[in-house]
Amino acid sequence: MRPLWIRVLDDGPGVSADIADNVFEPFFTTKKEGTGLGLAMIYAFVQRFSGRVTLETAPGKGSSFTLWFPQT
Image 1 (cartoon, rainbow, N blue to C red):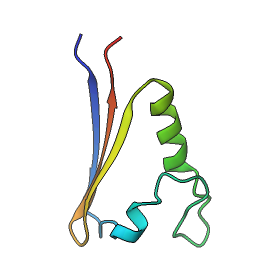
Image 2: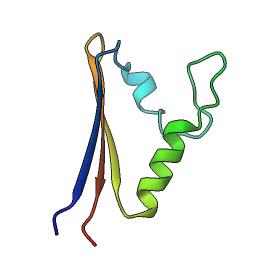
Image 3: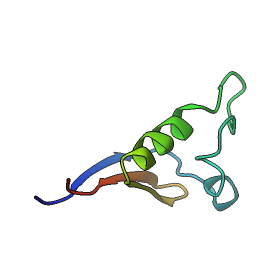
């Protein structure tokens, strides 16, 4: 079996470098009403299955989150 890759892309404003370092931290948010749990939960879920999550971003052009799960 081959590993499973899931990629989520957007064409939004991207994520600045100082924020990108923290996006997977619980309770980190840039939103006034955000909880900062969404990406932290995804990160924990993927790690539980020995996977990886990466963020590629270009300010002004968008972001790409890639989830990788190993074969079992």
